[in-house]
Every structure is written in C-alpha cells, then in structure tokens.
Length: 274
Image (tube, helix red, strand yellow):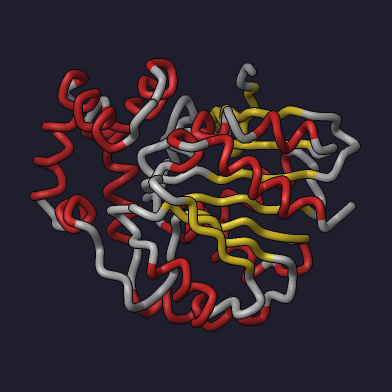
C-alpha cells in the first residue's frame, strides 16, 4: 500500500487510494497524532467489500505540507471539500477517528447531501467533554510550545507513542512523528487544539441531529483520552438512531490495537448497503 500525491493550493498532499475508482467512495479521516497510515489495516477490508477507500494525510501530518494559514478546525473542514473535489469523489461514506471526527462531523453537517453514511470512532463533539491532560497543555500558550520541544526528541516520542499505542509498527510511528519534528511542524497541532471552543462545538452538536443517514459509533472500552461514556453521549445528545459498539480491552487507537475487531464492525456497517 503506497501513498499517492497531489497538489491542492500549491501544497503537496499525500494519500492512500485503494480500490476501483468506479466503486462507491469511502473517505477516512485520521486524528492526532496520526497520518493516513492509521487506516492501513482497515482499508483492505473496505476495498474487499467492493468500495474505494481514500485516506489523506491531513495538511501538516504525515507527508502532507501544512497550510500557509493557521491550521484551525474550520480550515481542516474546508480542506475536506478541497480534497474531495480534487479527487472527484462525489457522494461518499465517511469514516473518522479522533480529531478526524470533529473535522468530519463538522463537514458532514455542512454538506449533508454529500454523505451517504458515517462511522465515528473515539471522537466527541459534546460540550460536556473535558480536555485530557496533554490537550490542556497543548492549548496553553507557551506551555504547549515547551511540551512540543520535548516531544520533538525522537527517542522520547517513540517511548511515549509505544506506551499510548500498543502494537504500533515502526513505519507508522515514523509517519506519526513527522508533525513533531520542529517547532514549525508542531504548530499545526497547537493551532488545531487551540481552535476548538465550546460555542462551535455546541452548534455542531445540535446540527448532527439533522443527519438521517446510517451512522455507526465504534469505541475502545478503555480510551483514556475520550472516555467510553462519550460514545453513548454522542448517541443520546446528537445521533439517537446511531448503532453503538464498544470493543472490550481496547484503548483510543483501536484501528492499530485491534484492527480485526474494528474491521468486523466496519463490514457490518457496510453490509446494510448490499
């Protein structure tokens, strides 16, 4: 599975694109600190079920170049449209994780006619959510920059990542590290975390209820960053018709930790379109 490359607004964007182009498109959006490789064990199952799977390195992550402007939540949502139009994807199914969820849910609310279904994993848009410890540090000016300096050390990043993401492969970890290499690259993450605010969250928490498409919510039972209770809050507060599935003995990065369990639930989701 090899990344392809395109240019959007004179910036290099790398992405995975597997399956026949005439098949229904599935767009997969990663979170932080990730790249499109978070999906590498999920994409074959999607393609094998008759779909085209497309997963970008979001700007500033993996190998994709960052925006010239601040890397805000709103800017990433705008990028989804730019990327989708560049690849002529048309109507699509959306699969999202972590910050890819906030970005994708935002985009889906504003482009409801373009989304056929959605799978949301370990991502909340609840105004009851409290930022986890590292996120709080990143959101604090000055403090976040100092934390990023420490995380730019490859050995420290590797140690922390292996603890947070059991079973991560070296190639995937190196791809995730790209956003932390320098103060300039890490600014993408700081911009993104600092752009999240309760007013915006509340707007989209309410707008999600307008989505009448099939939606599956998949969560790791032991997620330390977005606790399992937010899977049920997402259903209760915004998507009452969603199907919730909890994977036992799994954490936040379920696509890497327990890909077989994730694939089983992903295929169950897509079977309804047969």
